[in-house]
Image (cartoon, rainbow, N blue to C red; front, top):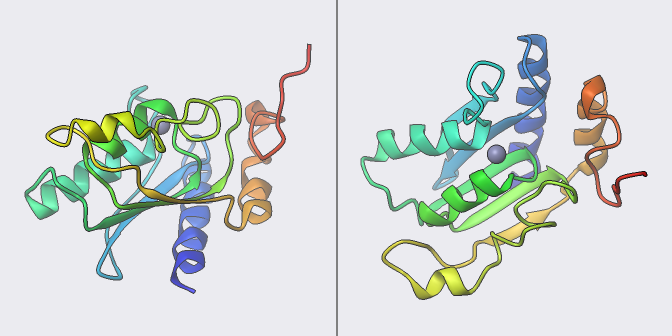
Length: 162
Ligand SMILES: [Zn+2]
């Protein structure tokens, strides 16, 4: 199944990102079954350079339009609120991610991806994308857990201990 294939590629990117000295995140964008953009996380040098932001910018440049409503975004981890908002602005039709982020996510925690009200401003935002959450989460989490700083911060059922 294509979704699994692309999520595995994101999980691979998350490992590569760590090997390159960054945090374990990787994302890609698919249009008509083909990868048109992919990136690791670069937030170690610039806070806003999350993998999702970088692939949205790349896809925007490549397609020459800010309307990415024919595109699917894949990420090894649930997009944060910043990225989720940008996903809505770029009108991405479907979002697939592996590891859930109940403490910091734009889907589990802040519901930005599924917000219906944003869609009432169609000049600026797309409809809530179809979301597939937690695909191959165990595999995705296995990589993220190697990054010590993230221990206990990601994965379904995560909660802060007092
Ligand atoms: Zn983000």
